[in-house]
Image (cartoon, rainbow, N blue to C red):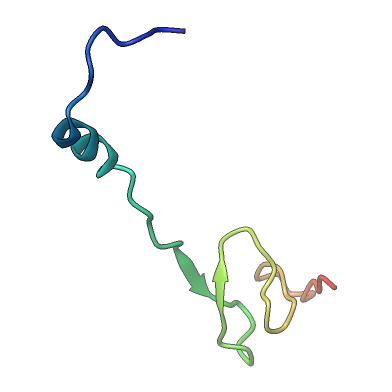
Length: 61
């Protein structure tokens, strides 16, 4: 593993670390018209348990 030749200043360290920002998770509206909950993509709805917008209303328990 590489070893730095010189000490990195506080300013440079903090400038580098400032790029590591937390981002808000993108959510979408639940496909169930009766639910109206917010769902993270590719996850089952926490409110009603539905996954996807299919006609057979797949439920995940």
